Image 1: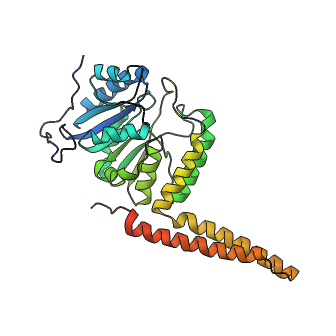
Image 2 (image 1 turned 90 degrees about the horizontal axis):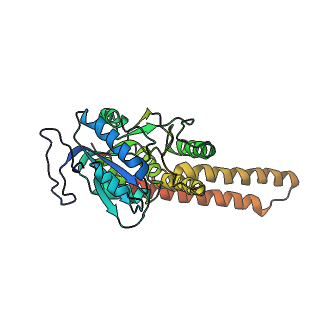
Image 3 (image 1 turned 90 degrees about the vertical axis):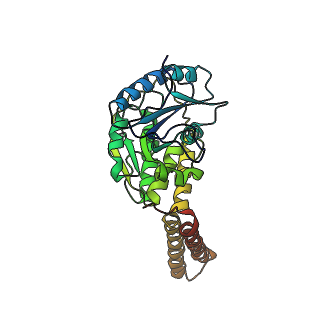
Length: 312
């Protein structure tokens, strides 16, 4: 049995001064959330360690056992990972947050425990962090790891998110990414407990002007059964809208107000043709003014309080 420990390069040993972690600081802490993933967790850890020991980066592998009942935690510990045990299943985001808080590092990498994402890519993603706050392993829409029945919904969410963020987002919820800890912690308080963790951090960094790099990857079919449900689609859509309203509210309120204004204007032209001005046209104009006003107020609040400052 391998003893769980952080692997450090010479000269990188530092202890946390704030008491947040009892473990030495490393270049990258790899956090693996796992809920009943005994089938794939061991292979994932071994492939990850094999890739990282060949790299110049010191690392810590942290598996968060999210209330598993199949011995996932014991399997991870047997393969030498440091295990954080949650007494009950709290969700993907909650597990990631627990692992992040239990580690001390300059960068945080996340990867799923189901064998879907290639662990060998983590060192490569680290090499791209000099010019980025977050590096995302981006799957193609036709990637084998994405079930065909989910591809239309994923495409729709990606299109909506790209429009609202005002830039192309190749993969909004990839479970393989490396993040600069200082940037990640700026948004820690708004990150959700569920599967929308990755979507939220992607939009938060992009909408606040952060630097995000996308690196193409190829995934495999997952081991075990997926925890996602069909009903999660509507939750993802609402999450995208809510997150963008938090950081860039005019992107939502201006088009909505313009649509109401155009409805009122077209009805006004029609009423003029009939020489009968109706309440519908007036309501359209008033609704547009109200929506625009709320949008401007939300934008002011966002600029003054909600948008975190960029670090130098």
